[in-house]
Length: 222
Image 1 (cartoon, rainbow, N blue to C red):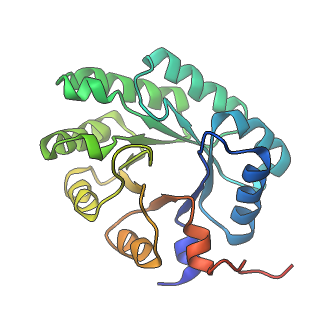
Image 2 (image 1 turned 90 degrees about the vertical axis):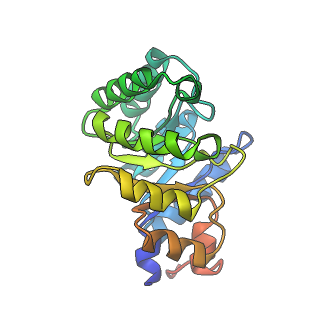
């Protein structure tokens, strides 16, 4: 698989609690140089990145992160605020407790409300597969599809486990044709990247993807 094709599917990510502006700048410069799909950054840095890098970067941020148990109203406010400050894509965490309680209608309502709030901006729905049964994952594939979200995403990277091939293949079987798949968490090798993309993932969320693909060398001069 062509290296640039892989880079073009990476959401180059920095979401650590201790990440500094210098860390975010480094991430952004790598993303611009390497042509990644986006940078995925904390909401607190969205405005600064938008001002610094303008239209040279596709900015993704996270909402309800990483546990998902904020109220729907809070998540909507977060999302609208992030978009107003320059975010192009929103990765939201569902209310996992509602899923475990069997309250799927609440989950559906929330995702629908979030998609309405973000409008034409891309909405990725993080379902945090490590906490779900197979039946819950299948049910969520239908809910994400019905709600009109753009992506279903495996993980936050902050749970007890990350993306697995089994989950990606399950998603591919059960989501609607308009819903894309993002794998995140634990993608650590070039073979991982190639395998997940080959299995149907349109995006990969990883903090190390650029280094993996380029071998630590920027694929550009200067």
